Length: 391
Image (cartoon, rainbow, N blue to C red; front, side):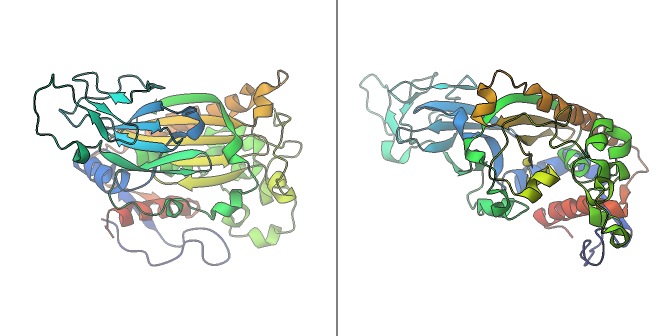
């Protein structure tokens, strides 16, 4: 177990670790018992992103999910409210829905096994017992509910009975994203990818750009500061000596002539009208909701990535590219100009994450070491420790 580090890695003149720090123990990335512990203490207690609310477009629409072994059912009820339940009949546990999505009939939710029927609010409505008396308390036999909340078109669930405030899950003041019309955006393209690595490996890769020069040729061309293996200006200990430089290699942002993350760096044409000059100049903004989602916001589209642990050494990455309706309706726009760019980055990340997973099985590799630039990896690992009440 690593020792306590009572210091702020971003305090002082630059962002960076100021002493040698060990990573989490290597066995935490493949040990079955550790995975089960994280499943219970992190994944079942935190808000987890599932889908966009507009993928449940009509009354009685439903979607099903498998969330770390738990069957989840989302449904839009007669009043238009999104509800979440365990996808399990109270009779003998049968899955209520076989398909990943669909629309219930006006009779409600009927179990395909023994035809117990539930209203869309989860209340038991009917038991077909051929007129025989039964001893089931109909009023007390509801579907097992799951806490659900919606933030700006994104649907989150929490499997614990003492769910914290959803806003506490985000790593930033949510007001920073007010200029993006997130509620109105539509999924234009999706990609699901399975990566043979522990979920923490993927998040650690996301939280540093030390790997960028050797792994992401397209990304470091688009964002020159990433070419230096850092994420922002103050990651350089000597940043003050170059504070007046307007070169994106030193101050961050898109390369000259590029405005967004597309193959050619050019906008798709329908940009978000309320962005500030500073937001447009930077060209990208990040938001994280551990343990399951991050957003990358650009001037013309938004990318949402959902991370789900599938086991100790397998992670599912589901990416949604969100666009204004005008973009998707414009025949002159090729949204794959944006999708292909970030899909390439995701593929490159997946390959190195799998390499990291393989190497941690080496018997002498009890833990790794963090470089100064990996202060956000340290921050993520501290979050894991705190979530498990381990110091």
